[in-house]
Length: 397
Image (cartoon, rainbow, N blue to C red; front, side, top):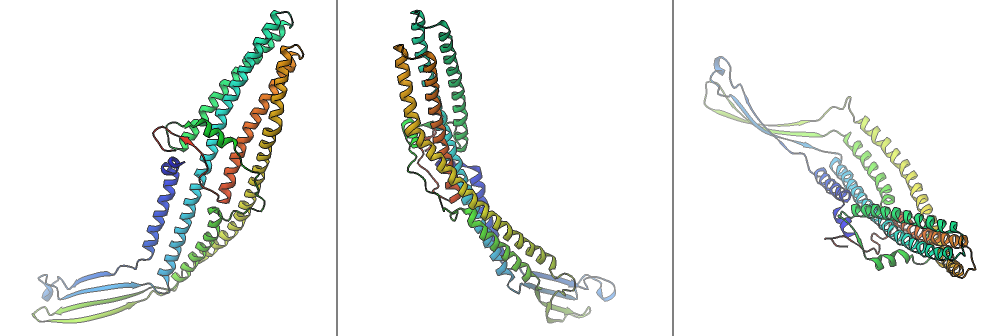
């Protein structure tokens, strides 16, 4: 998990977005720069203006003044963007943790499926040996040996398929962990996989800690701040001008100095920022409505995920405590009875099929429990890191 959090490009991009928004916040709080003005008048011409010596030189400064609280409003919008970027970063981190937990559960389940299929193949070989002995002794028809060989062939095919799926699942986990390959601590991984804890209680759970949920209110606040900014921009800026001018007659050496102060204000005859105000108002309405819908969607998704999590947990618990032990006892009785001639070969095959169906169903149910739990934690904003132990060569777990 540490590797994924450190190396994920998606998480790195979200962190860069936070830094970019902070840069925007810094820029939004800066005042406009003053302007330096320099002019030479009557620099050249004919008659007394000949010779290239300026008769009037002016040096001045102009400063645009933002009035009506525009700078503060602009800083508020930028601060809201920083908050939204922080929510996006938290959501990206939760997405990554959920994906890693899901992929880890998938990889462990795939490896366990290989073990199940290998055990199935071993038992099929054992049944085939017993069948051959009975056929050679004349106590079983040769057709039963063909059925045992077919069952062994089917088990071998299933084992090969499980091995390929395990490779694919492990590779998918390695991609998320930004590692070349992933090794499992066998007993530790199995303990984590099989220990699903007490029955979940997700009724009434709300996604209040979900950054996507928290983002909704901040998105509305940002839209309100943007509307306030556009309204304040309707107030025209004032520009102050100040300059010092020196005057000289063309035929004289004496110079006179004058100070000039000016003030300019735009006349808002046509552009009163009404278009941007209308757009910002519509954006606020759209954001409010979208937030209401998204809030209901997140609450419904969490409720659905909680129900699926509970259903998967109870299914796994029933399989582990009831169905699987019963199937194991039934197969044991059938195998011993077949050796003693008390059960037919078809009864042995049926008991074997039931046993491995139960083992496969339990494996799938346990994987589903971990997948659904990861989804519930993502939607509720739950714990970031679960007790997993994937190791990658050359990296930390």
